Image (cartoon, rainbow, N blue to C red; front, top):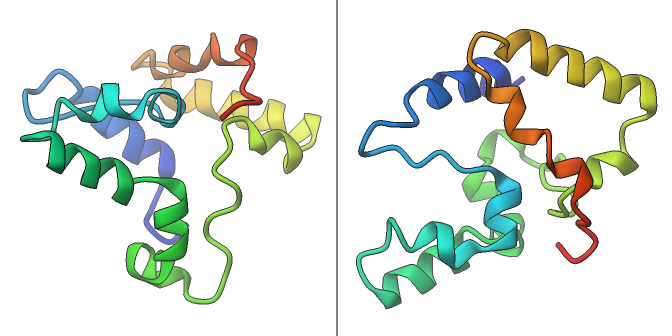
Length: 125
């Protein structure tokens, strides 16, 4: 992985989630209600609109060489659709990833954040 271990990164920030200068939020939550989550970091409405625009999937995909320069010509962003991993991973890979998530985050409880997501209809995201 270019930027290091994903689980170490996420678990490290999850451990700091209660610090006043840390906003820990799931991608799925931001996709569902970006203004709700991002207004807590915006100084005013204009700043909020800029944050929402610049953190959108379409903007980041269009500017991928700036936001992920190490990826160069390789495809970094796929579709930006919640649950799209289902079109990429087969059932065995899904089980392997779930085991890895539970194992790597078992001491933090982080894995529990995704428990309810399977029950949600993400077709509109």
